Image (cartoon, rainbow, N blue to C red; front, top):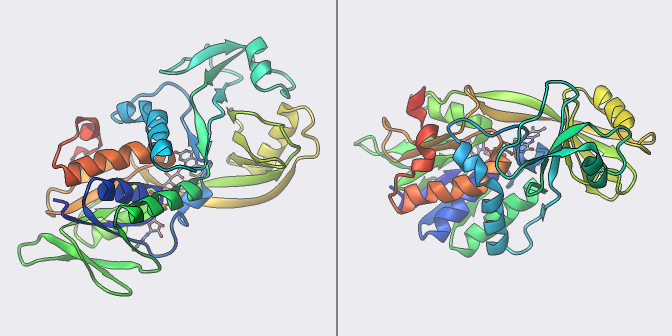
Length: 335
Ligand SMILES: Cc1cc2nc3c(=O)[nH]c(=O)nc-3n(C[C@H](O)[C@H](O)[C@H](O)COP(=O)(O)OP(=O)(O)OC[C@H]3O[C@@H](n4cnc5c(N)ncnc54)[C@H](O)[C@@H]3O)c2cc1C
């Protein structure tokens, strides 16, 4: 399928596919309507991990997420990753459940991990291997890595159509700037993937799912880990900055103030509404499209966590011609 792979979308997913496919020896052209990582990737909380036990068809891929980040960190020196671990708890709901690589810790352990908590929870889930990234930085590093392996990168070049030959096979894309030929086209265009699929008569059941990302000014060292509660996902991104994913800025600000000692002066600096590409069943859609030979889809939620693993698996399918068992539950034909 993939002698010459055209990847549409230079978000964290498309950048990872381009990097891994180029590294595996394919001729790769990465095309984006704007700049790398400027889609929803720029508005991500960017936690490598997830709350609760891991289940569903992509559970195997999710379970390898941190190990896959460790791999690309070794391949791409300077990757902006912070390995802080994550702490999750809920005020109600009974005993927490720990997944692979997670442990249940009591209040005495929680205070050693988050010393500024006003009232540490009785129990929490501690995932010591979790981390977080600068998602735009990782995307840029993947694009640079793809270039190092010979990929061409066309930016500010919106794809207007997928080209097909007389037999109906994909032959590349039309862009606002120039056509790009290819033997395989990967749609990794986030929320725009559904419209690009529809133009080929392919229904990609992905919906736009808005979620606010909040930025706060905060004292240095207030929050040490990735903290996940019913009120927010919260982490420190710089000495005097926190970010949070939360439904309501006002409630999140109040919750930060009541959760941490010394957080009285925390100030909301801004809110951005990120629009996540959300498959209707919440699971990734990754794989070839049977009705359009040469067309391949890579669209998912939690893509910051999954991008390194998915990129590697997609490259094996496109370039090495291997059908990856780990992607079996992620195919479009499940709908
Ligand atoms: C507030 C918030 C918190 C989040 N927290 C987490 C988290 O903690 N962990 C996690 O794993 N995930 C998280 N996510 C989700 C994660 O950010 C997304 O799953 C991920 O960024 C999606 O990446 P993508 O590459 O698919 O999409 P995008 O980053 O949107 O990339 C798609 C690219 O396609 C390009 N494009 C679109 N149409 C065209 C076209 N016609 N031609 C050419 N290019 C085109 C766009 O310009 C864009 O660059 C969060 C999201 C939000 C909003």
